[in-house]
Amino acid sequence: MLSKCTWAVLALTCHIELFTQAHYRQSIDPDGELSELYKDVFLFHWKEESQHAILDELEWQREDAKLSDPQREQAVTDLIELVAAVDGILQMQSAADVDYFLRVCGRAFDGKQVQQMRDTILKAYRWQYIASGVQDERFQKILGGMITGAQMQRIGAALKPIVS
Image (cartoon, rainbow, N blue to C red; front, side):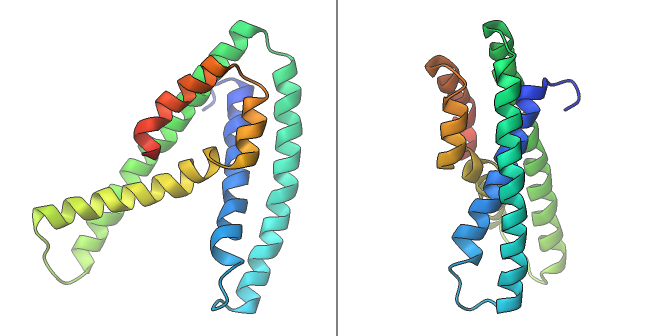
């Protein structure tokens, strides 16, 4: 991460802030079965993340204004590489989580069932930590306002195996 440009790091940071907000809006806020105290704690966390997202967006736009076209092209490459690194972490974590579950669940599964678990957990992690953020309307608008159509297509092509 330290080798990547500031623009790409700010893009990833803004993405994270926005997917945490999306998680609250989609799963916590509408759930009438959750404890009001639990919901309240996460509402205040959502408000804090909202402030962070605003600041991240402003900082990201400030950084974007400094870039030349070749620098922005490299920034897009750096962002793609950062998302790939996050995906690598998710692949390792999902495999470790499935392995742990298989050790402690108290029953055996056949190879097909184990593979289905691995695929499902990885897909869920990818949705939560990558897809829900990059598909967020606000993120799309911010990013789309900074890059060319060709750069957006590069990002889309890099994301295709992750978000499909």
